[in-house]
Image 1: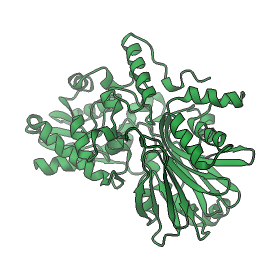
Image 2 (image 1 turned 60 degrees about the horizontal axis):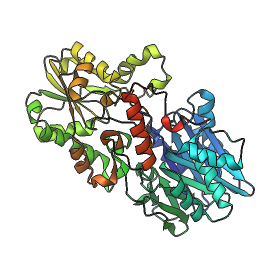
Image 3 (image 1 turned 120 degrees about the horizontal axis):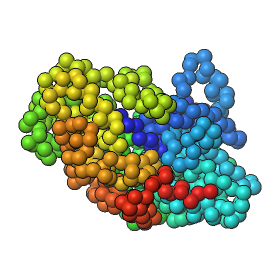
Length: 495
């Protein structure tokens, strides 16, 4: 997907029980998950005292001559790491610096550090609760809501009771890794399990790790042990993870967009590799659109999230998959750093398309999603100029009709082309001969999960948590009545 949605975020944490420094593990765990957040990165370690290093942009490359410097500045056998895109708080330079995770909060002798992936929906309620005790508190970003609530509860109870109250009183998506002031590593997941989180250990069992995706474990040669259950707290111990199911969760609701776009293809979700699921997406195109498929001369994919689906489509149909589009590997800049008049140039900067392979052909373009439609239109226009006879878009993620409240930065109906137009209308707007979305049922079947165990809110209008459903319904009614949406509704009343 070339429109570059922002998703918050990626976490990695580790504890070594032989007192070896964990920074190298955290560094590589983050590097493997840098696709989950480009705006900022942060490291935090503990050796009796907390040590932190943060910065904007990608996780930096550590040069050989700098290794000792990093180890000196980030000592300790337990630590957290985080990569972020913002889906709460400000996006100006000062706000981004301030909101870079992991974050630390202190209350008396109690101290806590967390890194989290997700988004808080009932932000105003939590702020009001905090302000009852701390009147001068001003909201900056949702990670501090979780950390302050954890500390607020820890005053009268243990870690498990604090986490349980967070699970019961915070609505939203939150996969959290954290440390206490004693250097205890813990992690937990919201009762719906909307964002991924997994655990693993080193081959000799001396190091425990928590990661948003299994690739964070793989790169460190750790074994993947288990996915953290929705509503579960895990604590790192010398003999492995101690697991406590604190909330049963009324339903599990893993974000379906993880399969289509966010997760790396070599990660495992729900006991399946993501690339295998995406290949099945491509096969579904052949079953769901036989008439259009019969007209296709050549298959082309938008790298890299369209590649696996294109292979599956090619494998079942026998139509040649011409890998005529390639990503400029070292052009990592995202659209948010470009001037507004440069936005349409991002496709040329990031993707190279070999024109002579497409001239005179009916081209099937496989991509993961259409959100706003702007850059999709640019791609189609470019293919037309290269001589493509027909352009058929095959989109693995079904038509997005509603906002996300759980950590994807698409917060309004107005910005979503699919909330206002059907597939035929979208095809006309972007200049394609057809837009062929994978069906919701096809997507669900390919994941191997039950429909009730996926969050499909943005493509069905049915959300897994009550406040999100209420907000979506109110937003839709206002939008249809001409109300001008002014940003994230879950922050609209935040002062």
